Image (cartoon, rainbow, N blue to C red):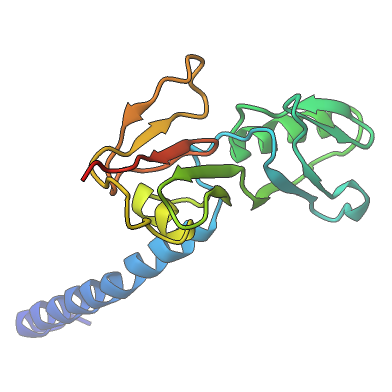
Length: 191
């Protein structure tokens, strides 16, 4: 049956409108849900606590903290170096290892249950280490540390990047991102 041109144009406009409205709701929800997932670029390191789940194999599931050596100890597989891998890379590695004589079609999922620390010191209310979270900025890290002290110089904040071999302090701004093992220093202002 053929519809009149008027109906098909109207129908297309309604479908387009519905699609736009749905995308307006779905995209922000997807972004919010994605914030809870393991970021695809996050590299695992000592101090991260991870959970490994193998579908339909509860004896192979594991929750562990990555050792200072960057390794985990896994039943049946021994010690595995995980430092520097993303969650997806670790999933692929474990899938390959399980296929080599253990399981036919393993489905492996890796998630982080607790991130490494970010350190805040200097002129803040409570210096110390705070768990890294995706989306963490200098401003948020200082808020976790109780905020600035009365003597803080908000313009000369520095960071030592956790993976920097030289431990060189570099200037950083309040809205800049923070990474695991970063050491943020808020200096005293000169009045």
